Image 1 (cartoon, helix red, strand yellow):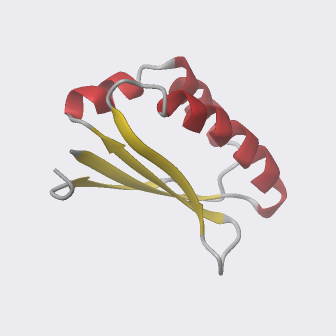
Image 2 (tube, rainbow, N blue to C red; image 1 turned 180 degrees about the horizontal axis):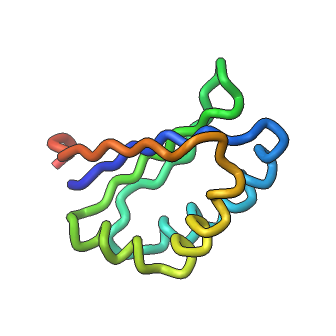
Length: 97
């Protein structure tokens, strides 16, 4: 399993727009054959900080996700909404198998 944790910090006045943009990416991602999980999380203390937890079957599924129309549209719109660049960390999921 391939897991990515993405931190996204949004300009305060753009949070609602971010949620709209990311909802389309979320809804598309969970329909992908190699997707196991795609969670959008909000920091309870910093309302403009979001974490995206993405779990895919393998690296091939991750690469396929990055070519989808919903991902490409999201990335294109995201730049104007962020207060700083995204931070990504990748992990190898061990459990569940």
